[in-house]
Amino acid sequence: MIEVRELTKFFGAKKAVDRISFTVKKGEILGFLGPNGAGKSTSMRMITGFIPPSGGTAVIGGNDILTAPIAARQKIGYLPENAPVYPDMTVSGYLEFCAEVRGFTGAARKKKVEETIEKCFLSGVERQSIGTLSKGYRQRVCFAQSILHDPEYLILDEPTDGLDPNQKHEVRLMIRRMSAEKAIILSTHILDEVDAVCTRAIIIANGRIVADDTPENLRTRSALHGAVSLTLARTDPEKLLNCVRGAEGVGDAKVLEDGSDALKVRIYPRKPDILIAESVMSALTASRYEVRSLFVEQGRLDEVFRSVTTSP
Ligand SMILES: Nc1ncnc2c1ncn2[C@@H]1O[C@H](COP(=O)(O)OP(=O)(O)OP(=O)(O)O)[C@@H](O)[C@H]1O
Image 1 (cartoon, rainbow, N blue to C red):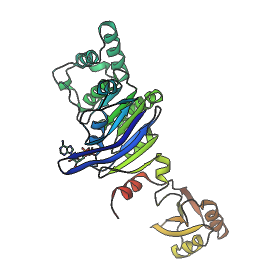
Image 2: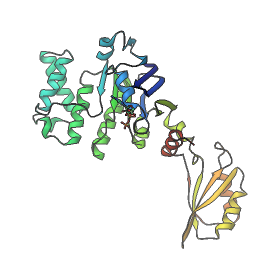
Image 3: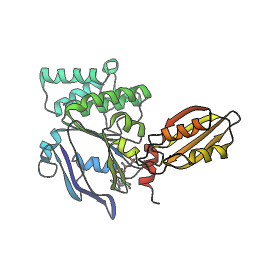
Image 4: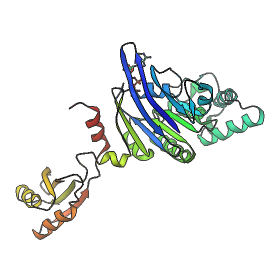
């Protein structure tokens, strides 16, 4: 388990991270979200022992990063933001070096490097020097060094940054595959990634945790959650709005698009947990409206993100 306790960081007078606390268990993939400058990278650097906290601590598999830093760091794989790599080294040379630093020698080192090259789809470029690789491949090499020693705890700062959509997909698959026996924290600006990979998400703003929940539950905080979006054959918008507003559980309704052929409307429940699709459909059928499509909105993470990270 990763336990983050009241972690705080000051840079001069600026409080970059403000008493954040949370735990991540094995099997969990925690998405770390927040606007630029929110304190994500600083938190990750403290959790991995790269910079000392001004207050609080992190405990990695029972090892306090302050009092047992070596034991804690042995259990961690860390992909930093803008990870430093050695441009003149070949991919395999660099990974051999990383394996040696991690304590692997001889045949075990060779095996570890070969396995990692295969796992990270680097077979085609293993003899190429890192400086000549594309940005996406360099990112993969950095990712490879973070998982080489098969750590129990993985901290990944924007692991898919700079990757093309296919590579993003591969890295997400890899993260998901590894997650059963690891606790993983990853930061990202891509909200779709949270849906695709994360079992839980923490949103940070101004160094503080402002939300901590599953992506599913976070979406229910969206104003769109439970709304019904409808497309109908062109009809009088006002009459239609009056009709759906009279349906049981409906709070409000508005026209999204009034086209020459079709009318699009969105209907909101009176309270977030009221299901209105059935009563809306009954009201429309009773008044003989021609419904072309009906969609129940799950809510949107980007909307929740905006509402919790911007002051009213
Ligand atoms: N070494 C440093 N010295 C001074 N200020 C710093 C230092 N590192 C980070 N900061 C400041 O701390 C705050 C948090 O930065 P951090 O890099 O953790 O944000 P972030 O959430 O990772 O942002 P991004 O999404 O842009 O990567 C910012 O205001 C940043 O300028």
